[in-house]
Image (cartoon, rainbow, N blue to C red; front, side):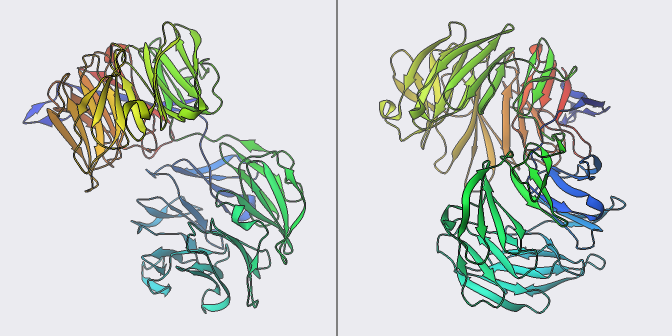
Length: 596
């Protein structure tokens, strides 16, 4: 467990007077469990991988050699120049190129909606920009068009920068970059929904998956070869060439060998030790990527990965204060001061978890609900799978919880261990449920239906009334209720602004509506209900704290490596936890002292 502390104070001055609330002395904690999805292979056996929002360079033994922690969103593409001197990463809001030897940022910019990322053979950056593949000279910054003329839907470039697969509306083309010479092309289904490409080691063929079909395009071959069962080879799976004549498709721990000439399966499917994404590089290197990173042997893909490492996460999505001590992790509750895990019961297939008032509720596999209270774990319910339960919200005192799914809604009592009430959409005459939360006394549920106003459902009678009238073009995404009964509803509108409505008990309209430039990720009232913390994707002030009674902004701070919705208050409201590290440094959780 690595712990670092910063001396930073955030206070807001409003109307010429200093705020009565200060967020001070943030402590940054690191927990394991980063997700890795992409790899870029470098000389000397080194490899670059994404770790949530960070990009790390690992050596042959997968020991971290260098890390960049300056990305705010999840990495969606990663590429190394053919000579291994430059490394590029892409997020939704930024692309950046670094010098591998020095760690220096070479260039960066804001990508277009359809951006991809690759390098040309001479080390220039290649990116898709509004249907055209463009080349950026990293020395001069000059941008020139390469191909596409605004008609390209997607593109994938080989690791050496010499070949590309171009996806258009109704067909794909295999081309040689530089000359744009066509090597092969094939029609694709109208309902294709993505592009995954793996080039053969000799550069003469490429396996192309679109989510609707899998094709082998071969240089000089007029007609593409359809892969047997190719419609079932998803974009989430992995293709690894064993040699120029054979490749393996792997997904969820199962693999199938295919002939690269005929596209026919070879022998029976076989099991892998790894259930994760496979990425192949030069010199027979294969990595297993997911909740850990491991090295595999090309000729023995079914053998366990060795070595295997779990990388530090940039975000925690489960957390709570227990005994006044912050606990957080990626699907677990680690004591951030000792590193010891708290036993909150079974954590397999953890769909949702929420801590309130030193109680922790968990929803496993959409059917099993447990609650941790006073050092003990109680199994509250095993629910019907038909409800498709996915969300869980607890009352401010931690006693009650509501779990909801498209086809089911249930109120649970953590003290008695009973299911107090179940509802179906048919009973409430709505299409389906999107979320729900119990009122502080457990006598009613506030429900987000498929569309229309939020509902207040009396548990005893099933009677419905309007809890909050949403604007006509709005979709609600999150709700919380304070100890005093104030309702907070986060919603988005057609103009893409996120808003948060504060609704007093008994009212159906907001007495205050807050507007945010970024997406609202998390909302949480303080234990006494007097403060409201809101976590957004704002680049400069992602964490904001408001006065519940007036909606006045009291404090704002935080540039985070943000992918989380985790917010948690300490008992008494003396500390506030955010499930993200501070931008620019390694870390998974930030805990602020709250001074009123």
